[in-house]
Image 1 (cartoon, rainbow, N blue to C red):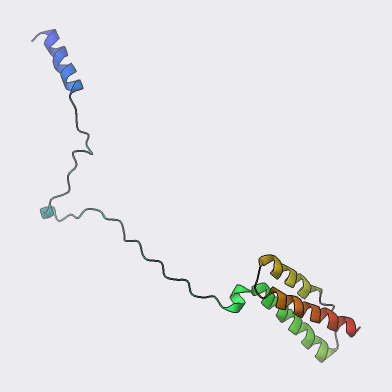
Image 2 (tube, rainbow, N blue to C red):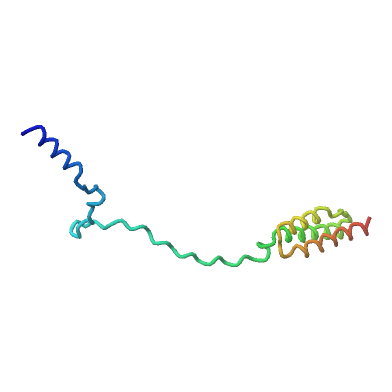
Length: 119
């Protein structure tokens, strides 16, 4: 065998189209008992349950609750608080865009008016 024949064989093998290992892959035979990998099915999203009124407006509910607490405290013990905390909570409710923010503001105004009238 000559040196030129070795070079030509080698060059023809390099220029020949080859298949990669992935291209030659075939599915396993049904007799092997193996099943091809399949990703888990995507579960359909369930609709989110409606949130309650208090869950949608937590800061407004807190403001109204504090006002009620202030009024009960003032009527039972005679201790009157100014009512700044409900005002701050109602401002926070407006900043968060809660639907009941006007109700919280009215309750806070009621607490401040009540406290100023009983000083």
